[in-house]
Amino acid sequence: MNSLRVLARNMSQKWEPLKKVGIIGVPFEKGQKKYGVSIAPAAIRSAGLIERLKEIDGIDVKDYGDIDIPSCNEPVNVDNMAHLSLVSACNKNLSNKVSQVLKDERVAVTIGGDHSIGVGTVDGHYRVNEDMILIWVDAHADINTNKTSDSGSVHGMPVALLVKELSDYWPYLPSMDWQIPKFSIKNLGYVGLRSVDEYERLAIEKYDVPAFAMEDIEEHGIQKSINHILHRIDPEGKKPIHVSFDIDSLDALEAPSTGTPVRGGLTLREAIQLMEIIHGTGRLRAIDLVEINPALGNDADRKRTIDAGLCVLRAGLGFSRRGTIPSGILDLPVQTPQSN
Ligand SMILES: NC(=[NH2+])NCCC[C@H](N)C(=O)O
Image 1: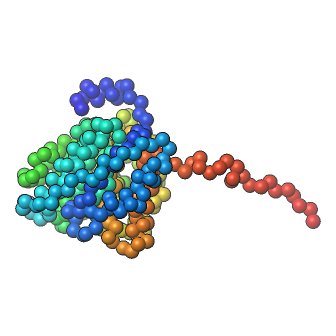
Image 2 (image 1 turned 180 degrees about the vertical axis):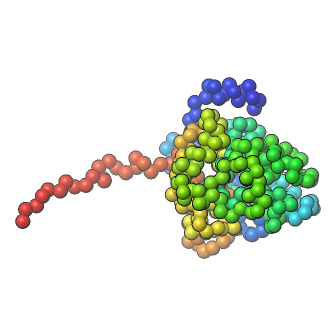
């Protein structure tokens, strides 16, 4: 969108939560090393994704199905970056799909897949809303480059691939030509951090990215933390919001079935409140739900993790339990003094 159109929209638009939602599944796991995160879209659908979203008042849900996942991997070697050409091809398809859903005037809800798919979702969103802001809810900062990553897993790198300020830190990445990093790190905020690598910390400090690690959330509470971030990156409250929600932002007790769990994370209540606050701005336009791995843990773990993810989505899309308790049910019976 060009800047005149953005200006015109900002002057005229009163933000209302979008009631139309588009679901995109991304059965992709090559951004990390464990089997299982690719089966999450199917597992989450069969746990009742669409039905549970339809319980939200006035919602209109359209399932766009899964994107095509490329299978052949031309060998592209950039240091230790694993499966770069597959990650790239998947994200290219995903970016187009996210743009399409947004142009259909639906909230783009992307079900991963590992967090490398944040490249495609944010790229696709940015192409429709250049003024978007990004809230990365995660235990990890995912802002490594090929040079700073110990693991070589691209799910630890999507933020660094997306932001223009870090583009000079990358070598030429064959197969990634379709993606031109234009998103500014000034429009990024973090919630839930507790496992940040050394160079990631330097990047966050250098660019003064508002980052609420668990200790900050403990100190200020989730409400003040998210309001602070939103105000810092968009003081006038005029920009569309993209939430990239990694299930490992939740405490490992709440969401055990994930590949890189870290203890000491958000409670489910905090995550729900976070999403409700963002929903309440009326500006939420895209949600990614990533890193649920149904192949890890036992049945109860898997169920718990998927259910937590569904609660997060429902909160972001306007589900509220308020008003569902029949009036009067909580009234205490009037006590009459008894004489004995
Ligand atoms: N989205 C995630 N689960 N990321 C985990 C990243 C872990 C580590 N920092 C790495 O770069 O490999």
